[in-house]
Image 1 (cartoon, helix red, strand yellow):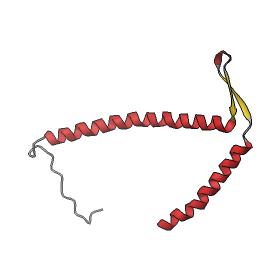
Image 2 (cartoon, helix red, strand yellow):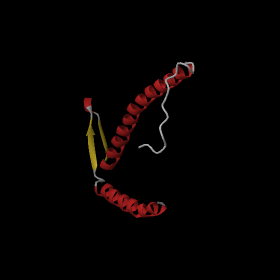
Image 3 (cartoon, rainbow, N blue to C red):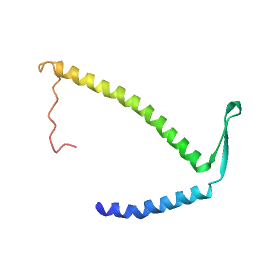
Image 4 (cartoon, rainbow, N blue to C red):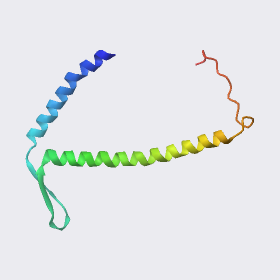
Length: 100
């Protein structure tokens, strides 16, 4: 399995070279126009990078809120399971090791 790691390095280099070439070919200055007459002149590659990072950030924030809510639910359920006495806990049937 370790040899796959060495095979991925040339693929990563080629992908980097293609993306770097794309960036250099699109180094033209573009104008991003906002409301109220504000504008921002920047290279297209920089604008793409900024909006990609912003999208990734907002995506992570959306996932983190869901993960925090699920984690709190798991903690609550574990606490409830520990508080039960052994006689009340549901019996989990033994499953043979060779069962599918």
